[in-house]
Image 1 (spheres, rainbow, N blue to C red):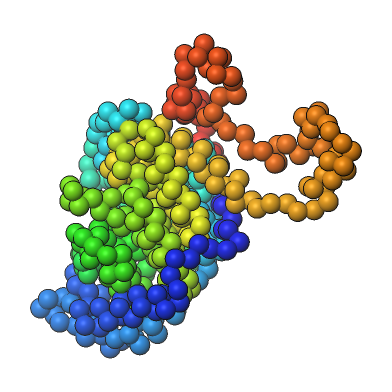
Image 2 (image 1 turned 60 degrees about the vertical axis):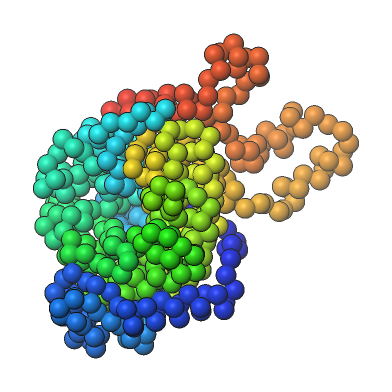
Length: 456
């Protein structure tokens, strides 16, 4: 996990935070949410929400929502098969999980094909192998060679085989969620006694929780398992084009669903946040990797802290089709935004291309390098007598490369890139101009050649 910065990057004044929250509560009260689950609507009605049975629309008064949102814990532990891999959610640290939900797998240049179960296994093994990844993942890719009805059990079992870290389970309706949690119980034991399997509940913006997600949410919450709530905001498409308007709608959707979770099971662990947020209005699609996404990450995190709710973002993402310079600068920008925002969970943190439609082994390893840079920045700066090294400086001109102080401290003080070659320009030319992507794939193949999965 990566420690949060000492001070978070703040883009809103307190008045700005209150403006978004007031707008969100007004949307909940006047427009409400369509929730396509009769059980969920009935539970809302029992606590005083207004339910229109015909439209399945639930309207929630601000005071009712606030009362229940306060029951959501601000900090809790996500348990792993290996207790040393447990993740504390809500502490001042960022936990990372790889890409989620891609239908395709691409090579380094962007040529793509439909994903398979073997692809899924390879990404799961990389996630288990990497020190940067804290949560193995969930639907790393959608394997076309596994029948949809079989995926919940098959993929959950594969994740548990490939890693001893925490994981996401299936949210393919009530049946898929139930099958996934059954497999988790076989391996992890009594998961009801502790949060162990995350369920990603995507809200169908604008202002709708569809039947599939609502049913999965009920299964997870009743089983004591944490949910990650994410609205499907696309500025100018599924929400207002302005960030303020889109943020107010997003928080109406989030607060409504947090309220539902707490109505079902007071104290249910939740994580709230934004995934994609920006949009490409030229093509009418999503805009992962754009500046608006980075800004929305910073703004939404401020609002989450107002409610003391753990927060997720999508850092390390890009709209680039291949592992190119665009993929690098967009992924670094969104990664830094997630860290500076004080996010607690970074989902989609490794491997994604093409607005998360595609996963790439090369991009996965490049993203791990990016997180290595961020983690080095996050360590802070030592300020003590030994670190100042005044005796060496005051002794006069010296070759610091040969001094004992350098030998003692260089491994801690200097980040050692794994994808940047330690060679001169002439040596680089003689070697055939290898680039970071070439080195990334060499490392991936080395890792995948290892026979044992972590924890086995």
